[in-house]
Length: 252
Length: 307
Picture 1 (cartoon, helix red, strand yellow):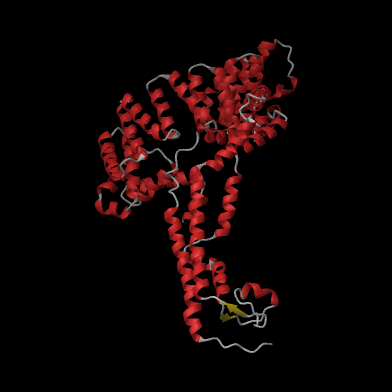
Picture 2 (cartoon, rainbow over the protein chains, first blue to last red):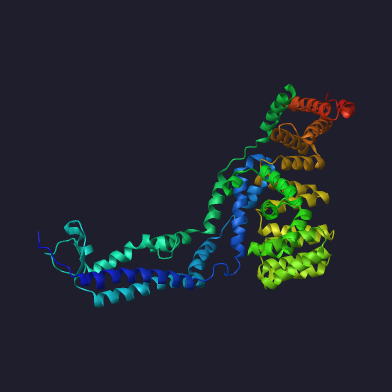
């Protein structure tokens, strides 16, 4: 094993602690800045009439699908035709329309703007702090973790030091920066509440999920499931049930 | 306590509302609690709400204790006051609100409602049109416009508005119900039947829709409709456990009408027991609840050759 390195206490006082404090402060600052930059949610223009209508249409078609057995066959057939009839049915979505919807989602300037703001508020401070750390604190060991680690961790813990002789449990200052960057998430959720904006990973997930919703798709799915259901009128059975109910009532 | 109220059923909540009302009316306190509950349940009890709410609003210290909640109270009292035709109170409340929230849609709605309460239909329409310019999808405003048409007695206009509304908000079953009732009042039974079908689809377990649908079908007449009507009366009987007298009568009337139409060639032999059972249940119900009229019902059923 290599000789013990002695770390100057000045490194602790002037690198380790300031770096952590600065990272926390930047995180907090970023939270408030992104909060400021976020456009007010309710001020967005009134919803698209088509989207409103499609949402309602899906609900109505779903009602038809789930309780079709409660209306007479004639009424059901009329409704089924109304929803699913080839070109004229309400659930029919023209091909180019579906593509247009997708395109509209991407070209919506508000949405793109929002995303850019979010990304900006993430990237700019990160680049700045990284440059700052790189400039002032690069190339020396800043801390030692109290347990031994395998060679694999060298890249993670000793970023910026290209010495293979140093024990892996020593942490370089640049690596300390990265550890803070990724490890402070739990602390932020303690300080800023559960829904803090600094949680980049979940934000990415949300962005992906938000894109996935496509009204045209749900219309099509509803149409397909409406197409395959068979109408089985439950009312004739109800007569027998009613007889039983009355018999029971009369026996009492 | 919040958890306890959340689990309480609607009936319990209503009982609690009445209890709180009693308590507050007799000076036992709990006025604010009562008002909050009434608001949450959307109970329409304008007189006590107006009395208690106004007392709270006139008490400066009580009002300041409510802090931001006082504005909701102003709104609630304003609506209750309009219900009681205390338009002066409503006007004061709305005045305070519009000073506090200039340009608010919610206040604009109240102002339009005040016009309506006064009967200034033209002004109210104008006010609602103004709101719709900025929020074309305000469901409440659309419904108010329908209500104005109905209040003026212009049923065909109301039907027009309702159809336009339903074209957009087609899953709103309250609107379907309103439309169905208007169609019935206009004797447009085919259209009403369609609306009731829609209601049954949306909420298939509510017996009242089955009953109303059966009644519309019975009114339409014709063998097929009568047979269908009978089935829906039967489903009403099943859903209500045979407690619905109207449905019992309906089954009897339908089967007698069917037998008249088919003149003996009775195809539906299998369901012949239902009407006699229904007749029996009717007689039993009358014996229990209105014994003086039992003979009358028995005579009528005999006329229909059911008992």
